[in-house]
Length: 189
Image (tube, rainbow, N blue to C red; front, side, top):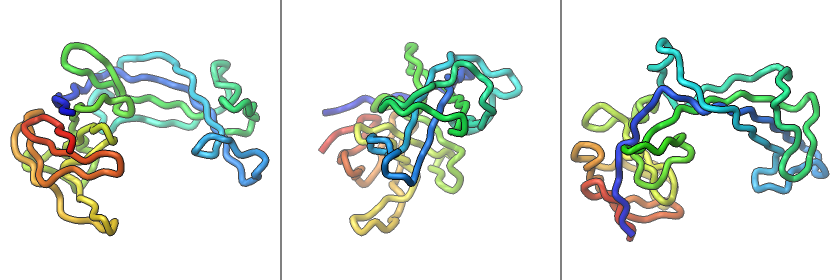
């Protein structure tokens, strides 16, 4: 399966959400979800950032809040009802745009999306940027170190071309994806 890559355009719009979560060492109170902690998120709308905040680096801003908002989620999907002492978190995730209109957070990025993650200090390509690509197997930092079968860091990939028409060598090997990035196309092995 081949996937044409595209540069995700960074916007000044943030998706806001209210999150409640709780963890426990008590086996009787553990959530049956794979993460083992209780979690719920309530979307709270999108907002355009003020001009002075528009150039902040990074993907999201997280602030811990006092329990004062009536919109907070009240229960985990498993049925656990949050206690007043459980955590409340206000999240804001920057939105990116696919050329042509579709908005998404980086967590929701479709396969083939590329973006500059310049907040990743130390991993820069030939253009001075840190390029990330969403593969079918997850996020891949093209300019980051590779990981060998022995789980030891190896050299970075060699990146040529101008995004989105990028070629990287050697192949991409992730736990759930193996492929190549050639002239802006993800090619599955």
